[in-house]
Amino acid sequence: MADLRFERTEQMLQQSFLKLLETTPFHDISIAKLAKKSLIDRTTFYAHYENIYELAEQLIDQYLEHFADAFEQNIKKREQEKKFDSYSFFDEELTAYLIGNRKKIMLVRALNLGMNSFDAKLRSLFKREYAKTLNVSENAFTIYLVVNLAMSNIDFILEKQRVPSKKELKKGLIKIEEFLS
Image (tube, rainbow, N blue to C red):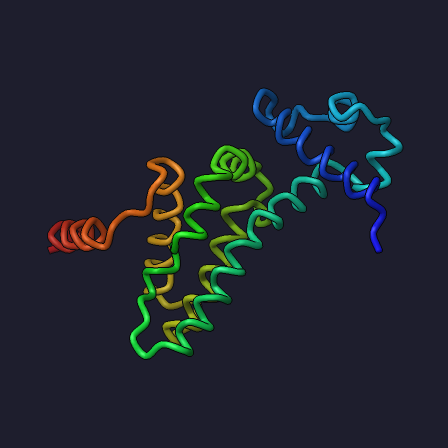
């Protein structure tokens, strides 16, 4: 059984970190600043994390868990239903999660951690899952297109706070096709 004080302190550190990100660039956040904002000492911080990067990566992974869960649910639905709507990945639950956590997700997305950043990890997840779903290589150009479409949906949902309709999607794809002709 986990120590509740330890968990509460970890949650407080994460919340304070996100609060600091609202006003302070990531590279300017020090352990001292975070400890002061969290009303703890630096030793307590080190009992939870090795450094600020580990804290940032843990937050990124926590926010990405919802996407992995959504893929898992969609796989189960696809196996159960003969006619499965693959666009329904952005179902009500995932959309509500994105909109409800919009501000935090945008802060976490802005963390520039290279291949460990939110968008890089999300792209990797999309790439792996769509390759399985479409039964094509992860390196197929189709996967790059679908992944970029999914990332565009994320951007749209966070900005407009709604899922683009299938009609909007089709209209956009038609415009792209016209552009390529």
